[in-house]
Image (cartoon, rainbow, N blue to C red; front, side, top):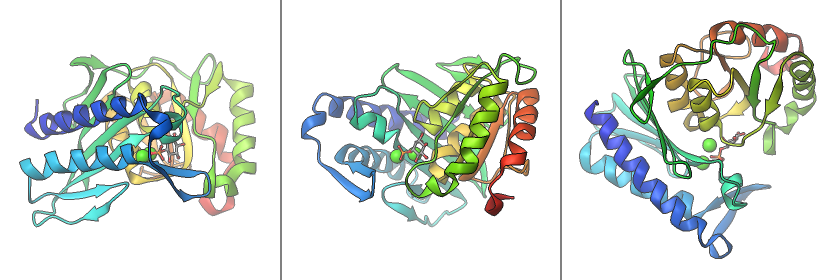
Length: 266
Ligand code: IPD
Ligand code: CA
Ligand code: CA
């Protein structure tokens, strides 16, 4: 395993322990509103601080982009760690057991390593560019699905500021509901991508994401043999809108969504 991945795993597992400890005292957690229906807890902040401390100790010169504390350029800025300490905070605060720690490492602007850790199931997803994707050290691949027929699709329903896309999104959802085996909205974008990489779903789409939601998951999916792009089918760029899937289902989903793209995303 690459040394950077080992450090990422150590950080993700530590954060995971902190997240699980917090779950036993959800009622007494300090929670503040970042905006309407947008909450951050002391666990998000504490887990992020622990991850950053472990990375800084091992690689003091690396840059960091983390959800709660923002960007900290490093002196050796060609490496950047992109961190979502708790992806699925809304789930977490309700005790709905679908959330994870997501850590991606970029080198000169290219995603190189990915670590996603699900502390509830103790599942560890890892990938390094060119080295395939793994779940608990076993190689994973996207499903063999060859189109929309029979496919299981995950998604995120726009909320907060993203509700500006709700109408076109609902048209997309209708098209997907009419043409596939079903839609799931699990509530953690990083796990949506990890589960797609593991073949548990066949494709995924969402609008209005942030870089830390998809940094690690994007590499996991491509290393598992899947495809990732924007809603217009362009090369994927971190954050924004995303479509991902096993190759044939990815193409079919893109074509199905295309007529319903919001004007500002065309
Ligand atoms: C959220 C989750 C959710 C997605 C949201 C994200 P957070 O991340 O990934 O599935 O629909 O767009 O913001 O805020 O829980 O880290
Ligand atoms: Ca997130
Ligand atoms: Ca988060």
